[in-house]
Image (cartoon, rainbow over all chains, first blue to last red; front, side, top):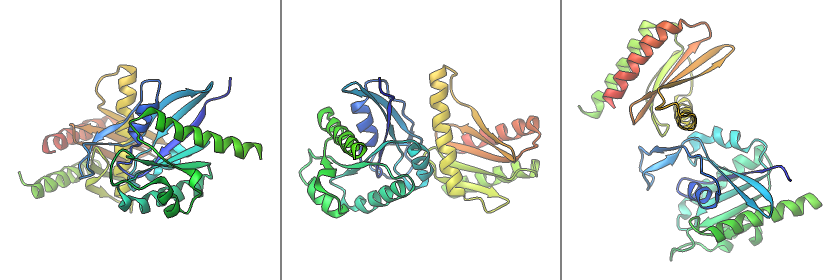
Length: 173
Length: 124
């Protein structure tokens, strides 16, 4: 039995981090939602973390979703300690958030260089950026950027599988 | 009550607390999603940071209490060798954080800070 793998889910407000963890977790999600007092396009926001677990091919995964606002950047540090992978989510219909997403990615990977994939959420919407266009924006290989719907288990799971594959590839080098 | 006078009442509540307990390093009221509303610090403590941390502590404390069946969270504390932070739930919308030196009269703090927390809850 392998030890659980700690994976962090980060990204700007409204990217779908909490939904992603809720969709995938096979155990009750520990979430820390508080009523939002600023206009962020939704009623509540994560103030500490979301925690969920799942099993893929016998490997237990622990998912930690972070808050999205910069004022909670200390939680990015706290949650990324000992993490073995990062999923950076961006809402594909909010290109105005891409710069912030890149800032979060740089903040995390400069302090803790972990393997990561970028997930472009809201692929069900009409005016959404395609993953390959987001890959170009982030200057990343297309294989490292995937489209998904955070509400939909198969596409969300595929993001984790891609992350695990990239990690295995790294370990065998 | 206009929002301007709310702000003044909150600021006055923090001032009263600090006058009663002059050894306090500071106190702050924040929204439960981590934005500062009123603050009073003796040093150059970053209020934005403390506000976010108070909200995180409160959110986490609530979950711990839920898990342990300890009921609604009223307060929590973090203690270090050189100081302490007490975080109080103030109604549904706010949080009060009080930063103290290590050697603090906790009996007095409990009375004064809980009073302040009640006032803040009423105002918000």
